[in-house]
Length: 257
Image (cartoon, rainbow, N blue to C red; front, side):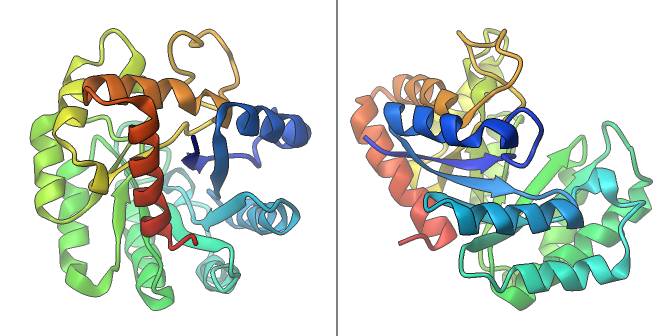
């Protein structure tokens, strides 16, 4: 059985300083590959370093909406330069976070639009962060039409109705360990209607450790197995069959051979 963690932050403290052991743990439970995701210009450089160092790591480079008030125009050009690397497989994460509003909403929107232009120019998929900003995120994405090759809403936290809207637009939806939580019934209902050819799974580590490991402070890609087991259960299918299909979708989305 092989799984791919489609969204992790392996440059973060607590993961980067123990990465060899963490990747051994991944291999032991069948998590064969990881996409490690950048959130600012300096971190994007570290992402490139990691994917060059580790065979089973791929990267995405982006500027998180939290950092919209701090980025500089040249950071977008650096983003495009990083994206030329053969193991950088997406632009992101990028999007809108109207929950924390660490940056002004207008600044977030400006950065989001520039990042999507970068994805279009680089012909790479876009990894979308959207929190408390579902409608505005869609409005901006709609303006790009078919200019963006593929889009995934990472760490999806909506319900079945929102999932249907995304699926109608041809977008992909990625689920985290939150789906294992007892109070996540709307999310579970959403997962039931998302076809496996439009679904990714992720840890978003070091955040969001799944049940029954929720007390583990630092989530790791190895814990992706719990998310896979829960969704396979919701889909009423064997774990091995689920893993095969979801891994195929992930490879297709990111263009991983």
